[in-house]
Each structure stands twice: as structure tokens, then as C-alpha cells.
Length: 530
Image (cartoon, rainbow, N blue to C red):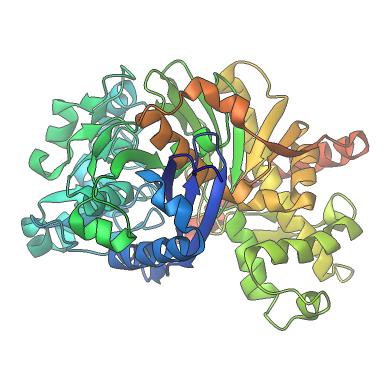
């Protein structure tokens, strides 16, 4: 029996839980384990996670992989992580967390952001002069919602001064995992992005901008050194090696945040090749050769894992979260919908249950329309006050109509995003890979194809996209393959093509959907003022 090829122990730390997989250079995934990680949603727009819970979960999944796949675990030569982005952890000089992770969903720093960066004239509370400088140097700007580290760090500074004084470094989620693995404090070119303190004009030379650092409100020595996603940043510390059950000789590659890793794991490493990721949030992303920003749509090309390229990212705040809401709030654990098919509440089988119902409802959900803004929106509008809603419910409306409307509503929002992506790329997208947990649903994939009017190519292992991306980044970092090799290694499960008979229906509904934001924004602003 041939020995296992070298394996990457690939970490995928999302908002809902921590996964790990063993990934070979050809993309073969042997072994998969996961543990949930709780998210605390707090009054006033707060959202936090416990970093030590991540570390505990990592040890548990490593132990499970060691029990179930001992041969492949013995072949592990590299560790590489993909994590949720835009979180912030204050750590002390020993690398111990002084705060929970302030999540990418956390909006408590918004007012602190406005105080730090205000001025006249202003846009959304921030100085136009500062915004122009951010756009020129970074390609973007802090979210007025406060949902990124630029605001999180100010929140800690202003509301926890004793913690701030003890803070040696502010780290993103990926950076903290890497610190625990290697003892080295670094940020990657993509994890540091949403601190909005870097000069990103040369993709191979991302560095801190002295002017942006001086203006950010945080001392420069509290910001970590920057490395490429493919850099080998060290080997496992004895403590980390024991925690994972791996040798101290195992190398650690810096890795990437989730949307960067997914763009690699989706096999879309060529220029202008988009993928649609549908998870808790969703995005359309594509590697592009130039730095560019569409201010109106809130999308930009930003530093990524491929050293001479940028990644166009158009982010939708909540996508699969709408399905989680359906599962937990509308379809209860003892619901006949589930028990009739002897289905449990895990992610895969709930899609099986939905897929039994969705095809029984005609396109257009019998007139019901849904907006998927459960927790505000990021693009193509950045508005923290937006909320989800059903429209045009009548006495004839049933639950199946509501279920299909939710699936379609996420797709309509994605079509809105796609219009901005088409303008950004300079040509309409005709084919797109789909990946992430939402791709498990045949019905949803078909709805995306019909609503977007594009061919949808489904990843054969959509739940593994981030882990596979981390595995491939680790493989590139250790010389096992190149980014150019990756498209040829990708496996497609099924291709969904648009249904011509549904086009007119969806075009008409989209004409109604598109202006809803402008009409409803004043209402939501009044209802959700903080």
C-alpha cells in the first residue's frame, strides 16, 4: 500500500464553527471534522466570540482526525488556516486575549469611528478628505456600520481604556490563530485590510501607510507586521504541536481570511473568473489584475493570496443566515416537514427538506417577495439599518410560498450585486462557480441560475471550499504546486443552466425588488436608530 502523499492540516474557522480537513496537493480531501462555536449577540449591536473556544475546538477536531485518519495525520507537513475576517482581538505581551473577539457583525464602534474620522465636508459621518485618501491608498474605507477592525479598535480604546493600555497588539481572527500555532505575531495582506492603514497600490508590496497609521487613533506598535498569505511563518510551538497531535517540525503557512481562501478553493485563480460563495454571508469574487474601486456599489479589488493580483469582492451581509433563521425560527425541530422525511436539523438534511418543497411552488413564490437584510447590508449598499421583510402576503399565502420567497430573495439581492460586478469587470458574467453550504441545495442553485441568467457550476465539495483553499495556499507556500495548477484540479458536480421560461417572471420581479432599498431606507432608519 502506497504511503499517503504530504498533507496540509487545513483549518476553516467560520462564524458558526471550526472545521479542519486533511488536504493533498491535488485537492483530495481525506478526513473532515467540525465543532460548533457559539456567537454571543449583545444589546446595542454587539457580537462576540471566545477565542479560547476556537482553540479548544481546534484540539477536538485534530484529535478526531487523528483517530479516524492516522495515516494521513502522520503525513501532515504543513498547517494553514482560513478564517472569518474583520474580527478584532486585543492581546497582551504574552499573546493572551484581553477581550473576546469582536466579530465582523459587531457595530458598537460606529460612533467612535465617526468621532475619530469626522470633519467637514463629511460623508456618512467621516471626512471626505480622509475618505479620498483611503480610497487612493487602500482601495476602500471603513464601514460606517462599525463592522470592521478600524472601528473595533477605537471601541476598545474609548470604552475599555485599561484593556487598551495593556494591549500589545490588535489581531484579526487569522492572526490570533497563527500566533497560537507559531508564537509569531503577524498579519496577512488580507487580514490587515479592514484596519484601513495599508498602502495597497503595489500588490507585491503591501505595507503600512505612515499617514493612515498616524491618523487611525491606535499606536503604530499595536499593529502587527505584514506577511504574504503564502509565507511560511514558522513551525508549530511545542504547546501547539501537543494540542494538535503533530510534530514540532510541521511548518505553518500564513493562510488567508475566508473570502480570499474561497477564491482559491473554488478554483477561480485566473483573471475575471468569478465565483459565488453562499454561506452565512455570501459574496461574488474574482481575481483581477488591477486595483480598482466602485464607490457607489461599495465593492473594490483588494490584496489577496495571489501575490501579483487583487481580489474583487462584493459582499452580501446575510445569505445562508436567512436559511438558518428559517430552520430555527420557522421550521422547528419537531416540525412535520422534517419528521415526515425523518430528517434532522443539520445543514445538509435541512436543504433536502427544503428541496422537497421549493419545486412545488412556481417561480415568483405566488407573488410573495422577500428582502434578505436580516442584519443590515454591505453591498451594493452599505446600510446597517436595513432589515428583512416579506411583501405581498395575502390570505392565500402559505408557508411553502414563504420558503421559496426567501430563496429567491437572496438570489435577487445577488442579481443586484452582479450588476455592479459586471460593470467592474467590464463584461457581463455568463458562467459562475457556486460553492459554500448554500450550494448543497439543488433548488437554490437552479434559482440562482434562473434569477441571475447565468450558468451555475457547482463545486463537487462545496462545504470544503475554505479548507481546500487553505490547503492549496499551504501547498503553494511550501512549493507543492502553483496557483496556475489549481483550475485543472477543480471538480464540478453539476451545471445548472437558466430556464428560459422563467426569465420574464424574474425580470419583472427584479424591477420591483431593485428600488425597495431606497423606498424603505427611511423607514428602517427610524425603526432602528441607535
